[in-house]
Length: 172
Image (cartoon, rainbow, N blue to C red):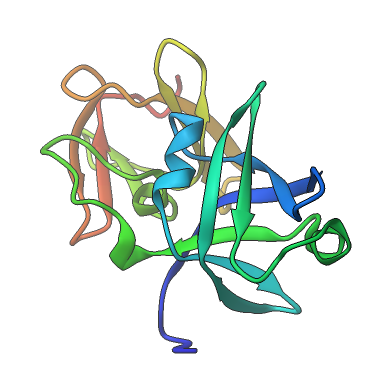
């Protein structure tokens, strides 16, 4: 396996399902069922990403269930519970202008219109109305929640320079 490959977590195996060795999956994709459109997926096993081909799947209640090639009974599925599922960065579809994958935003430096550094994007939160950047300034030990609203609060996302420029004051 090529270790320089960048893997993006898209879900986690949360249980075994049925008698054919299918697994229950908690999907990180939006909408949830999008995880079924990726094959292969990569399963985290002992710190390594192992390729797994998806043989089928569907929405089941609030979750997702899927079959993996070579996993044919529940005893084979049980040791996979808790394993993360990922795709490679190359598997992502290109985004439209002003659309970003969360994974591209993590770690970017956030500055305001006065060029004051607010911190780095630690994670994103889904609030229903819009996504929110969790920005940490480790030097000043502060945390800010900044709504990710393009054109209103977010003026610029520059993936090349790894900067997000926001209309947000230091003392907000």
